[in-house]
Each structure stands twice: as structure tokens, then as C-alpha cells.
Length: 149
View: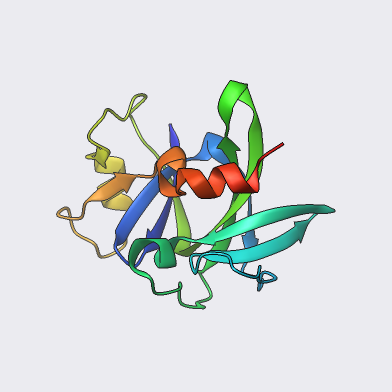
């Protein structure tokens, strides 16, 4: 399994690359009035409006830092009945892709894999990298409001 590694204010995460559509430079999304603070806004991606969420703000209320490695990860967000919508996720240090021997990441959400540990420059082997769950990160009521038909 190919994994995209990134960081938020509360740690390192791995996202299955099959969920990723594209990684784009950080652009400033257009704010949405009365949206939660963790919703950065909306961007125009190839003519389509795409909601963008700040993962650092979701984690602890503080927006991601504007670093050279801060990116917007465009992902397919799974909805009911097999449907998907494009969503942008702002994350820091979006710099590594690693191949993991795991095919099923298990229910713990913790990845323990030699490939992950050796890929993180200077991190040592004591770092915990958590599996990123697309369905669990955005509150259900926000998803319903954004993607209602």
C-alpha cells in the first residue's frame, strides 16, 4: 500500500494514496460566512467548487502554518450509496510517500511499519504515525449540510 505522510498540530498521519486525487500548493480559499473555523473555505478546482478543511484547526483550533510544505490534499470523500465528493484538506509537511507492507491497517489506527519509521528524516523509531480516517475527520452534520442533494 502506498501512503502519503503529513502532519497536523497533533502528530503525523498516513493517508492511503488511492484516496488522493491531487496535491496542490496552498492557495487561500474563499471564506464562507458562518462556517466553522476549521472550514478554510472553498476553492475553484478545474471549474468545480471544492470545500477545504484545515486539519490543524480541526485538531486543536489553530490553523496550519503557511510553510513551503503546507499543501492542500484533494481527496475523494466517501458518501452514502457509493457516491464520492471532492474535498480539500490543508495539512503541514506534506512531503513523504512511502510503501507499506500493510494491506489492512486494522482497527487501532496505529501504523507500525519499518518503511514508515525509516522514511521520516530524523524521527527515530519511536514516532507513532496514525492512519487518517477520511470518514471520521469531518463532523457528520457538516458533511450533510455541504453535500445535501
